[in-house]
Amino acid sequence: MKQQAKQLAQTARRLAQDIGNASSAQKNAVLSDFAKNLNNACEQITAANQQDLVTAEKNNIDAALHERLLFDPPRIAATADAVLQIAAQSDPIGAIDEMRTMPSGIQVGKMRIPLGVLLIIFESRPNVTADAAALSLKAGNAVILRGGSEARHTNSAIADCLEQALAAHGLSRAAQVIENPAHDLVGELLAREDDIDLVIPRGGRGLIERVMRDTRIPVLKHLDGNCHVYIDSAAETEMALSIVENSKTRRYGVCNAAESLLIHHDVAATLLPPLAMILAKHQVEMRVCSESQKLLTNVNVPDATIVAASEDDWQHEYLAAIISIKIVPSLAAAIEHINQYGSAHSDAIVSNDINRCMQFARAVDSSSVLINAATGYADGGEYGLGAEIGISTGKLHARGPVGAQGLTTQKYIVIGNGHCR
Image: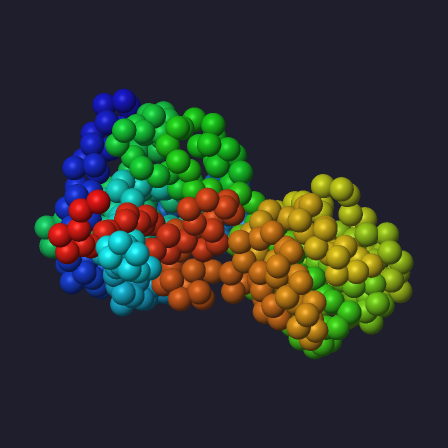
């Protein structure tokens, strides 16, 4: 394993200069061909995905994992379209920002450059193979991609499309997809701090904590997605109902799904019963505070869908048809609750009071704050990034959905005209 990890890492380091110096036209041509290859290989990728799904079902995977693992023709087409969107973006590499003339007469600015070599470790979602490769290449980085064993056949089929595009433009293996499922190989790669510049784990808390524990390489992390919707006393009723429904029920197994609902006390009696009816229609289990239980006593929903919340429910990422509900006495209490129990991912406020919205936006410590919009919009594609490498909940280097620019760094550029100090 040590020798294989060394070969993977050193190959990436050797090719990092090639991809880092590649022209915008060359990188975009790779991405364009990659998207075309994905569409052309739709039948083969779908068949490979069926193999993975059959195996996963034999292993009794839960509904959330099945939903993330599925890579059917509509998702393949959407992934190919995301790759084309990345290709269409301006090239971040070489851009010079903040150029200014100093009192000495020199000009000082910052040039955007690649990070170098990325190691991306992820679980379940096959589209991450394509998204991560496309964003890494757009940002001029060599990348090593290690997907979960549950998506092994799908990832291999995507990797074939990627390598064909790279080879056609003289950049073969600038993106390497690991097909060896051994955990020991990951451990050896995490020890290659001389060759790898950044590790990006994308998966459950166990994976991310393991990576952070086992490496000295900088880590761009995404922990839990305990996303909140707070309904303020100044919320418009129909808007609040639709935002909660969409935030929770659009897709359960994604990190930007709402897991917690907070409702201002002044509107709880009016809004909570119709919200419970909507959630019950989708068979969402509601784990509620004692005050919410009292308000819902006579609401005509199945008894099994409403249960008392525990302390753990306020901080839990369900990735399932479950939501916690709490009535709060004020905006300040909502902010305090989110900052205590949230995961710094994405949190929304529904309110027609702009001052309260701005107070919420300033005070909630999350990578994305949404005002009168569903939490599902916290997504790289929706933010104009084409796709995302993940949603960073940390505060250093990059935060929120990470696109191509988030996979770069900067160096100072100084321009003089014979200046000597």
